[in-house]
Length: 245
Image (cartoon, rainbow, N blue to C red; front, side, top):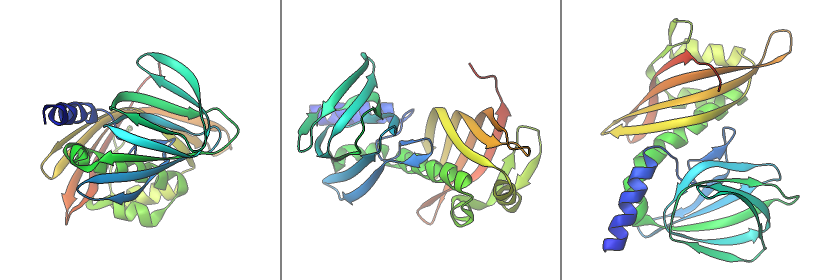
């Protein structure tokens, strides 16, 4: 019991700033999908084509199985290294405070992750909000109006980096007209209090200018989410310009 309690505390503290493997993605796209979840366990399948990675995230204790192996680059507190993951191999982990993954091989890597459901409970709301933010980022790049309408609350307000304030319909229209090609969130802190969640983060939005040239916009943002009818939705977004490091 002491072991499980200590792991739950570590997971809760870590998840305040980092997503779990399901919520984490790569350049705004998901890399893991939920195959099964109940009160006892959660099973994820994660897929990495060559050149695709997994942004910084944490793990609770888990067991893994390589459905399709390959060569992976792992970055964590101890540094960066490359490892070969043979097809059919398995691994067990007591939990990971943080790491980043990148497929540096020539084959698509697929593996299963099995986690204890009870340990995940303390971080579930934070992860749900982060997962919704990933959907939002992906929907902007894909100009997915249906997803944008689901993610944004009807009372949504956007305060842009130029000081202009707009609502849900204006926000969706501007995204559909824009030439956003991708977005990379570099920092993110999540705070959940009941039915309200706040994310503080930094991001770099990639887009094409009217003359067809690629450009970027480094921004700092604050996003507010509310939970209505058991579903999280974005209700406010504040963005300010920042200088890239």
